[in-house]
Length: 216
Figure 1: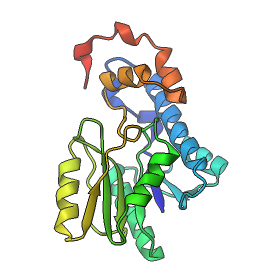
Figure 2: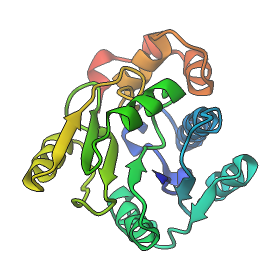
Figure 3: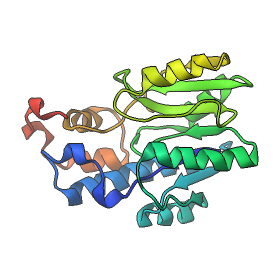
């Protein structure tokens, strides 16, 4: 099962607050989520998809594309949401591929590459472009090791995966590796090739006028 945790988008992307007001941040978060949803919907061989959320826009989008919703009533963060959704996967005896909601350059070919690289028992980790974060995790079985998301999650995830004694594949992927947290990430997204919703939105803002030192 593919799990996409979505926090309350009305309060999204606080690290962009120095350069964007909340309305623009919410608009960006919705655009990125829609880019992710469209990529998933266009993947013919995808496993079942579930949005882990109670955000109204995420629920509407899940309905539009026929995705399942695993209700996250607590909305306390990505880590807690995935821990709860992992128990659902355990009950169904399925593996879990966690995909964040803010990777707008994701492509079906990259997601298929994750499945193709996955061991029968073990994990696949896709690092963020800076090597610090984790932008996709596949675990077989779903509760093989716990996930703890944050700014520097990749090394702890790698250590936890290796501690299981099962095979762990590290798979850098250029599209999945692009996420948006701070202003420099948004500038980079606008400058990269592509025509995703998030890119078109970002290009409409005066990114060149933002001070480079404003990141994070």
